[in-house]
Length: 292
Ligand code: GLU
Image 1 (spheres, rainbow, N blue to C red):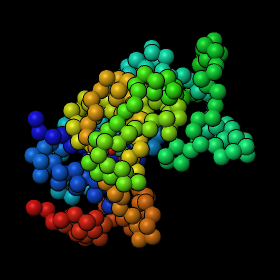
Image 2 (image 1 turned 90 degrees about the horizontal axis):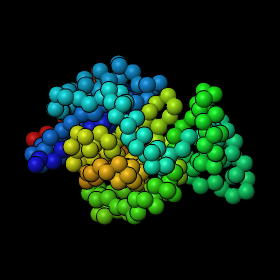
Image 3 (image 1 turned 30 degrees about the vertical axis):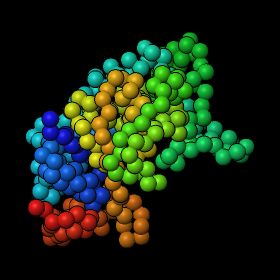
């Protein structure tokens, strides 16, 4: 069976040089290994995703000379499937609704920080400080019926106890040089959000389901997602999904060493294309050898 690669951008902005690197690396590896390359549009966040960004993804990738298989998977077409997975987790008592707003969470964290620094996840966001897990079933039912927004969070301790110790096979490198068989540390993320009242899924949940359904065997993506893989392995295990192989690659940085942003014109692919930069020059700019 040929290896299956995928590039999975979110249409919430225009692609930049970092995306070009990731997409080209996927395409190069797929070609070198006689593999397939799929494209997936990760558009579950309907408040931030826009059709013009999705159109621009197709244009930019075509300009880069990347050939993906014609059937593109759009996550927004599969919400019922993600909802089923959430229900499976709920039926096993592994998720609970949490009703605190973002502002309330910030207040709780600030109050806790006074006592001792409140733990942060690998992205630097505070772990969930709220009391959702302790609410009685009738309190939950009453709040849900009242129509207030909520997030469905994974009971990390319970999930971890079922799944046991997990690892993944890393062919690239983590931020601390981790490679080979890497021990997953999903507990570092606390009780992560797996869905919200208005969105029946989350990045962490959908990515594992889609990789499995699309038969993806090789996940090649930026090192900023390295530690997210811990959560992906946990959810894959709970849902009985296979684990692909992972290759996290270094990030392209701007002249000041900062991570690229979708809104910076200097490194936007459309802007570079409009300036007459060629796809070969883009390959050089991101440190890839000329196309063979
Ligand atoms: N959609 C994610 C992003 O644009 C990438 C997800 C992945 O490659 O796993 O950052």
